Image (cartoon, rainbow, N blue to C red; front, side):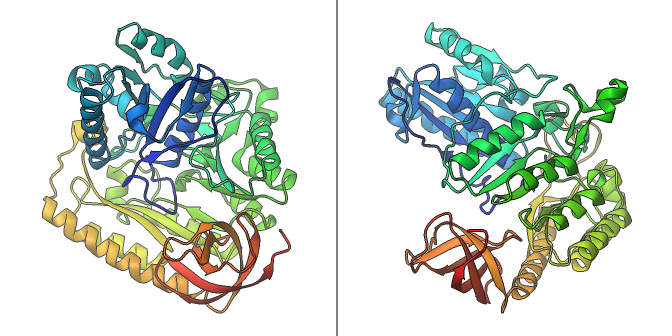
Length: 485
C-alpha cells in the first residue's frame, strides 16, 4: 500500500488511543494502531462498535479486559514490531491480568488468518479489516473460551453508517474514509490481498460525517483511501463493475473531483486534505478543483516508488516515468505553490545502478518537499515474492536508500526556504514538542510551522510571517487571525 501521508511516521510507533467514557460501560478496551492513517481511522470504528457492547477505552493496558492491536503488513519491520508487542501483552497477561483477552486486527490479521492463533499463543481473536461489525459476536466466542476468527473481505463499503469515536484526536483535525481496498496490483504490495477490491462510499454519508465534524468544531478533514483518486460512487459495489451498471447509474456517478468540489463548497470554513493518490488515476480535473477552492490544501502525496521505467514496469505501476513527470509539470502549471511528497523503494528485484540513478535524477527534476523512503522487503503473498528474485544485496539496498534520503533532505530544505519571508495561514494543532511557549500547526502545503503562542488558541487559523526554517519545520511570528478564523 502507498504510504499515506502524515506529519509523523506512524510505522515507528503505535498509538494507545483514548476517548471519552460512555456512561454505564464497565468493560475496558486498550487498542494500539500501527501503520497508515486508514488503520487509525479503523481503530476509531472499532472503538465505536465496542462502545455499544459495554467497552470504554483505557490508556492502562494492565487493567484492560480486551487488548487489540491494529496491524500493518506493508513492510517486514511493521510486522516485527507487532510481534514484539504481542510478547509484551503475553508477559502482562501471565503476571498481571490472566483474564485479559488479546486480539489482532487489520492487514496482518488478514494475511496470517488462523495461523496467528497457532503462532502467537496469547492471541484469542483475529479480525480482518472488513469484519469489525462481527466483533460483538467474536468477543462472545472469546469470553466463552473459544478462539475467534473472521477475515472475510467485503464487496461493499463496510462502515459508512458507523460514527467513529475520535480517538487520539487533537479536536482540530480528523480523518474521513471515502474508499476501501485497492485494485492496483503493484507486485510489491500486499494491500489488495488484505483489504480487498476498491469500493467507494456514498457521498451523502461522507457529507453527513463531515457535517458532524463541523458541529463538533473540527477545522480540518483528511479524506482517506488506499487510492482516493479512484473514488467512484454509482450506487454501490466494486469499482471494477461500474461498466455493468445501468445508464442512469453511470450518468449520475460521482467521481473524486466532484466529491472534493461538494465538500469544499458545502463547508467553506473547513480545510480539506486527501490521501493517498496514485499517479495513473490522478486527473487534472482534481487539480483544477484544488485551484478553485482556497480551502482545499495545496499538497499532494504522489508516490512514484522508482524513477526507472524498468522498475516501474516490474512493479506493475501502470505509468511511465515520462507520464509521471508530465503530470508533475501540469500540476505546477495549475498550482505553482503546490507541495508534493513521494514514496520511494530502493533495491527492488533486479534494480541496477542505472535504475537507481534514474530515481535520483527524477527526484532532482521534481524536488519533493517530503518523502517516505524504504529499502525493499519482500512481502509474502505478493507477485514479487512468488515470481521475482529478491536479488539486490542488503548492503546495496541500504546504501541506495541513504543516497535517496540525503537527496530528499537537500530538496526538503530547498522547498522550505521558499516559504521564508511569506505570510501564510496556519491552523493551530497543538503545542510544539520543543517548547511549551510555542504553537505548532501546518500551512496549506502541509509543512509544519512553529510560532509563539501569544493569545491564540488551539483550532485558530493564524497568519504567520515565516522567518526561518529547517528541513522539516518553518519558524515564524504571528501577525493576526486569518480571514478563515
